[in-house]
Length: 149
Length: 225
Image (cartoon, rainbow over all chains, first blue to last red; front, side, top):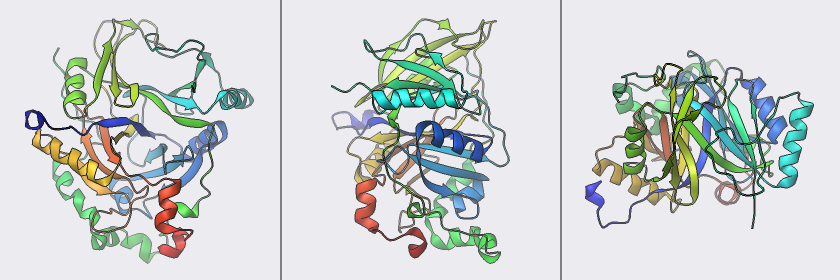
């Protein structure tokens, strides 16, 4: 990027949304809405979206409550998804109550929970709680308690 | 190390990438959607048709870890094109859920988001690095500093000057000409494949509770369709 030496470079501020493949949209939609209380914000279907029609995909959008979408679930109608390009993603629970509520819901849904961070080298703030679980397609999801000053 | 040349099956072929911008033309979208329109299967996909917004139990995405074949190659790409900063690269450690396998992690940070991305070399018990399949996620998205349409266009321009070619965009994910591609979210976005064909979006100006209502008021999607 030598062309930009001396110029302010536009760079990412943060990771904002993530779009994962799932094998069964209804099953995953139920899972994410029930466990995390995600808000269903839009649906791009091959019968309503030209891009989805051309790519043989269907996408369901979910909001954490501020942005239009933060997590999207995609079903590819021709290709099979797998777990071989992503190890995990982390969701920051809104507060202590939300962190505990997710765990309680996981227990009610009989979802096995593994304590601590998934990756041993990942950093954890003192006193920060975390656990991991898997969605119906075996995607690993790490839940971390957001610590606010 | 030498990376294996592998193109995942969901990757848009170069020829189609050239024509993808046609999605910004309404006539083209109408042509693609002619079959469901004629058969009356077409429906609105607009946001207001669904019951949003209230806070969920989640505040934000904290971290994403993706498999890469060569950490150095990927790190360079995310630093050079993506503008991410290298935080640290760790020694090999046991794979968290595959006994006998190992991983090596490279933590990358965005301006306001520490260690948001982990680039991972995964090795099988024989020490061979696995090749990412491209089929676990469709894309992941970074919000650009400034978070405005102009910032995304500036990013696209600086990427082009650096020799990077987007596989799609810049577009705006709504139906508003001249940028709108008929999708939803309102975000202005451009997409690039990283060296392992992980699809990465750089975006800004996504609809939020506030700006969506400022633009459309309480008009439901079905009324605007």
